[in-house]
Length: 529
Image (cartoon, rainbow, N blue to C red; front, side):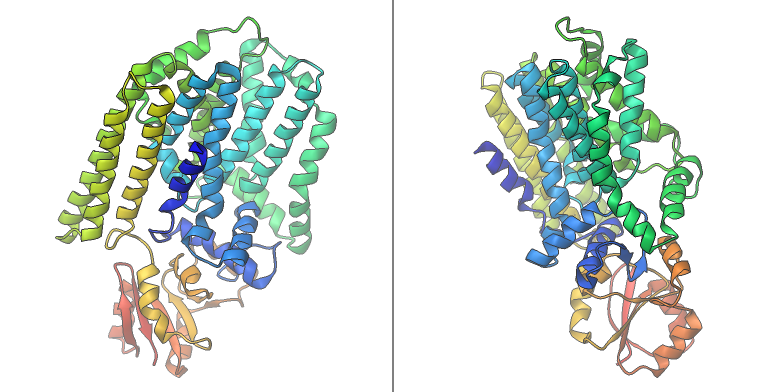
């Protein structure tokens, strides 16, 4: 019942805050277009080919749309579910090899991580990728700890191959690269190459290829330009060059990882020393050392890459949660200290949201203040109820529930205007003026959350950005030059355009006709009628 209750709390607030620009809008719109068109092979964004990522999350989200409609819950449903499953997955692995107290402690590390909870509640690809990659790593370690040649070893390795294939379908070839890099590093450090003979490649590799490759083959047959863009541009070019424009210093992930491991940073050095130095004589394979090497390999790989985004290192958190959980289980006071650090962190973030809003906008909306207050109260109530004399399971329950709910409250607070970078309110104000035959334009920008909330694609004017590849492939689709737009706009009797604010002022000054329907900090919605 505990897991059911925690799952309900985990999913509870996911629809209370809007989809955010740009990523949530993008990953909500691609499956919407997939479900609407019936083309489940070629991903499209605003009607244009979009080959940056594989389709597994698109498929899952499109299926949710088909069953339950398009809304915030269904858009985030796949991410929410797989991020949550990381908690029992981590608990079960640690409990099997290090006992139930360590399992609860490892789960607490993840549940109290602001980085993990926040990314697990946003419509991004990283949480699902983290689940499948973690499942593969955990299944691999279980196989290595099984009796050599046993059915347990074989079955766990087949699960590892299957999970790795699903990780590839979630985010691409980085999955086998990270896993292979970690295994190679472990073999070198340990001078142990026996693990390579226990991979069951004869059965596992065909299973991996059977699951991972069909979509890549079919989409390549339908779109001859796919292999070069996906494999060369999205993998090699992003890693080796600045083409993605996500260029950051080599130390970029250090503060990100610190955020991810709050409130357990004080425990981390001791946990790393324990995991690295403690040998388990009964086991030839050293699982904690392997998980540390895997986490370090992941950090090194993305730190060397020319493309850096904060969510990239999310797969490090479950293995580090294992290492920390085993360490914390032997130190009951650590949970109480962690609960208070979590409460103080939440209070600081809540205060920062309110102060920032007051200074930037001269007022803080009542919902924002309310949600931040509730978050702080929940965090401190949880901290007060985590006591050394209580059972560890009870303390974990308070810490997990308090942290998950508090961070969701802060996300809901951030989702209130004027802080929210979302077009939900703008679209709601404009929707009554839009009919089925109304021509729609995005001028000088592409607000990613407009199409999913409208349920329509728009003609792009004066914008390329990440849609440049699709525009080159199909320039006749949903694209117009500024002169073409002006001509169509002046001739139209029923059109709505979403303008970049600066561009609207510039065009309005030249006499472009139109009636302003609504606007926010980024966009002006204008009607021709």
